[in-house]
Amino acid sequence: MSTTFPSGGAPAAAPVMPDVMPTRIARKGITGYIFRNPTIAIGGFLLLLLIFVAVFAPFLWTKDPTALAPAMRTRAPSERWWFGTDMLGRDVYSRVLYGTRVSLIVGFGVAFFASVIGLTIGLISGFVRWADSIIMRVMDGLMSIPSILLAIALMALTRGSVGNVILAITVAEIPRVSRLVRGVVLSLREQPYVEAAIASGTRTPVIIWRHILPNTLAPMIVQATYICASAMIAEAILSFIGAGTPPIIPSWGNIMAEGRALWQVKPYIVFFPAIFLSITVLAVNLVGDGLRDSLDPRLAKRV
Amino acid sequence: MFAYIVRRILATIPVMAIVALFVFSLLYIAPGDPAAVIAGDQATPADVERIRASLGLDRPFVVRFGEWVFRIIQGDLGLSIFTNLPVTRMIAQRIEPTLSLMVVTLVLAITIAVPMGVVAAWKSGSLIDRMVMGFAVLGFSVPVFVVGYLLAYVFALELDWLPVQGYTPISNGLWPWFQNLILPAVALGGVYIALIARITRATMMEILQQDYIRTARAKGAGQTTILFLHALKNAAVPIVTIIGIGLAGLIGGAVVTESVFAIPGLGRLTVDAILRRDYPVIQGVILLFSFVYVLVNLLIDLSYTLFDPRIRY
Image 1 (cartoon, rainbow over the protein chains, first blue to last red):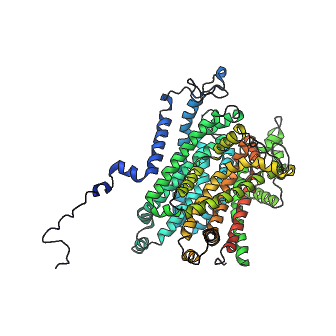
Image 2: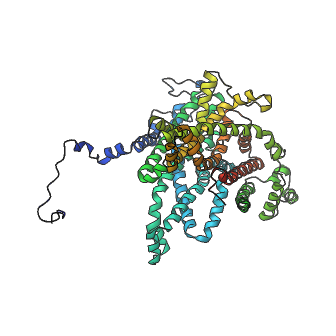
Image 3: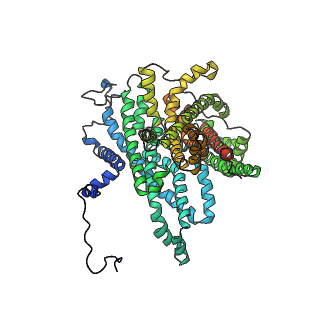
């Protein structure tokens, strides 16, 4: 009798808490989340700030980013031109702020499309045995072309536009996502609960929807953030070498490409978009690292 | 072992075939009709048709692809649309700077990243470890041209220690050659260093937990001996693998680095070819880079037995 748990009879006395305990209780709500995941918080804050800048670019004391002012060429940063002007007299501050739009659209766009298409291909590859070897050989082939070169080759075929940039980088990113999803699917298929579902006669689409898909989501989301970061860099590289966003649309790569000829005397034209690009990619990577650590603690240890 | 090598070499054939098919399709669907360009403005549709037939452009896709592959195997990559020179000769003229840049970057990255990763794993959780990991995140986030311009601005323009741009052939002396490559190699190596350091740290942390490390420590082996002889040797396989995989990023980065530092290599050739829509040159460069990438990763696969005798095929 003395060893039974206090399920009946006299209620168990509440343990006496020492005074120091309350400080150790985990904070709840948003503040708690921020304290537990500082990298997501910092990255997320920077990212929100950049989204704000992209959306409200016209209201943030910018001028028309394409307005030429030949008389005001290559002015150094000052009170009137915060980031100076370029060789055509355009306001670099306005161009850099508007450039945020292209970078974010390409980053999020590629992350979305590459995830959806890669997920589909990966699921097919993991479930349809005869298609698997064909799909994976094609992916091996595409992966052996360095992704920037693949995107460059695709851009060489088409006119420069934001849509085509997204398309080209997406194609270059798909093989990696497909491989990741296929790997997850193959390991999940061996799990007892999936085997049980198969044995009890569950149809394949239901198995995919109910048992496989939810488990691929966590690694997918983490992968999507890294794709977003690398797509932003890829867009800047493509625009920088003249194979990306058309020159009329201000993008960070374009601004740097235009500032390149003058950079030894007017370095600020190159440096301002460079700083914005680095901070944006850093923010996305921080969110990715934070998500990786909080969604899958096993991954955190590995890399 | 021999059978494995043969099998592994044969396995690269379908991969290269996919690459070739992709690269050929690129030219096939490329806008612009070569026959119409050659015929000129005055040509009638019949003239264009005749030139097309004489060039063999009217034959089916599969036939043309087969012929094209056959010529590539013989070492003929076609003629540049812009300069009318053989693509192989144009590549040969530009290969030295790119090869130099890649080799210097590779050596630099490995000699910096591996010790960084080892020390971070050894002192895991310490300030040094956190600095290495912080550097890795930065290395992934700051694009190669940003690092390039920053380095060139500080070390070439402000401090005047190194040349700003350009390339000196190795035949002009080792030091002038190396001097020109330091800044581009550091800029290009950033991401690579971050990648290798992270993998080295992760692998080393796992290995330092192993029993044989404890045994080595118990028999009185020095810290350096344990880290670099016992542990690093066993961490070699993942590290060498990531070096091979990272080569793809290095090739892509080289294209940009050459633009930033005005190095007349294959990257510049690619960029110029894109701006002129010179498809045979684009094809040739992509084929070459992919071939090198596949070849290096094949060699790395085969080298595993050297690092780890337990791996037998």
